[in-house]
Amino acid sequence: MIKNATGEINVAVENTATGLRNIADKSLVMTENMRDIETQADASSDVSDALYLEVNKFHLE
Image (tube, rainbow, N blue to C red; front, side, top):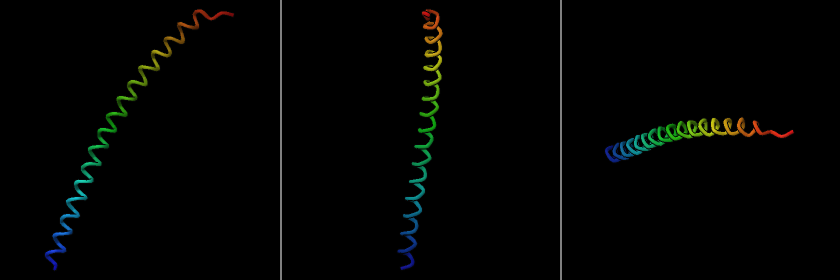
């Protein structure tokens, strides 16, 4: 009975460790994706700012 309970605890610990490893891996991917999104947003903002300045050159009053 004790041997059976110990085996179940070992399985639970292994499953928890696997779950935590998966969470860590997905967190790393999410962080990398967010960094890429930030880089793309910065580039888009730069393009938008440049276009805004060009359009304002032709501002009619």
